[in-house]
Amino acid sequence: MLRFTLLVCPFLAVAVSCADRSQSIRTTPDNATGTPATEKYISGPFRHKNLAIYLVHGEDELDGRHFVTLKEALEQKRLVVHETGNVQELAVENVSTDDVIYIQAGEIVRGGKQDRVIRSDMLVSPNSGKVPIAAFCVESGRWSQRGGESVARFSASVNSVSSNQLKLAVRHKGDQSEVWREVQINQNQIAANLGTRVQSDGLGTSLELTLDNEKIKKSAAEYTGRLEHIVQQVNDAVGYVAVINGKISSADVYGSRQLFRKLWPKMLKASAVEAIAEADPKANFTTPDIAEVESFLADVQRAEAKKRDLSARVTAVTRETEDHVLYETVDRQAGSTRVHGNYLNKKFKE
Image (tube, rainbow, N blue to C red; front, side, top):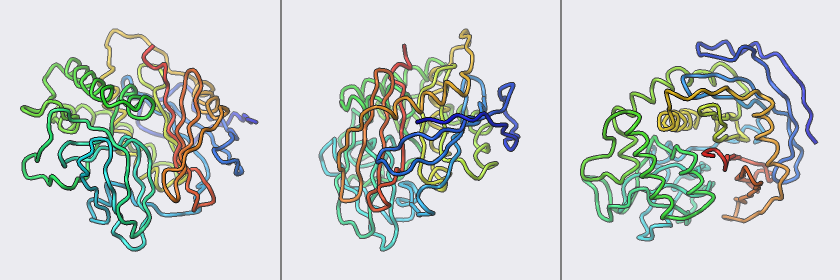
C-alpha cells in the first residue's frame, strides 16, 4: 500500500536549475523481503542541460553498518580481484580482517587480460578467500597484458557503465555480444556529440579507456560540478533518479546513507556521460513531475519477486514489468535488509 503526502522541501537551496516548485512525495513501498517498509520521499528536479536528478530521501535501514566500496578496497589493498581466464567470471578476495566490501553491478575493473564490468552486486565478507563473481568484457580487442598493468589482477576504476542500454545488456539480457555492441554504440554516440574521436589509439574497444578520454572527462565535469553538491546539502539522501532528455533512465536506492554518499560521485559521472551521449540540441522535452518519478519507483516494486542466492550472505531479487526492471540486493546477515535497488527503464529508447 502506498501513502502519498505532498511536502514543501525547503532545505535544498542549490545553485542549479531547478523546477518551478520544490516539493516531494512520501511513500511507503513494499520491499524485497517483507520486512517493515520505511517512508521515503523524493525531491527535485535539479538540472543541468539535459540531465535532471531527483533525490530519494529516507531512513538508514542498515543501522549504521559500514561498507567499504570496491574502489576504496582496491586502493587500500583490502581486496584482490583475480583474473581467472574466464571472460565471464572473476574471483574477488577480501583480505581484510574486519571490513565488508560492497561491489556494485556496472562497476568497471581495469587490467587483467581484458577490462571487465561486474554483472551483479556482491557483499564480500572479511577473510573471504576467493569468491567467484560474474562479469562481462568491455574491451573486445585484447587478451593479454596492457602496458605496465598486472595481467593477473585488476585495479580500481572511477567509472561505471553509463548508458541505459548498456546497463540492460549487462543486467537484463546478460549477453556478452550485446555488451560489446552497446559499448561500441555508446562510444560512437559520445564521439558524434563531442565532435572528436574518443576511442584510445590501438585499444579502441576499451570502454574504460574511452571514459578516460580528456574531452569526455571535461564535458562530464560540467555536469558533476553543478550537481554533485546537492547530496552534501542534505543528510538523509539514500538514492537518486536520473532523467535524460525528459525521460527517466534509471535509479539507484540504497539501504545505507553512507554507502550512497560514497558511491554518488561515480554514479553521477555515469549519468553525466549518458547525458552527453544522448544530447540532442534540437530536442524539446519537459521534465517529469515528482508523481511520475514516484510511480516509476513504486510500480515495479509490486511485481513478483524472483529470488536467487548469490553467496552465503547475498540474495538477488528481480522484479519485472513490461516497462521496468528492478534488481535488489539483500543482505541476509543484516536481517534480510535491502542494500541496493537498481531500477532500469526498459522503454527509455522508445
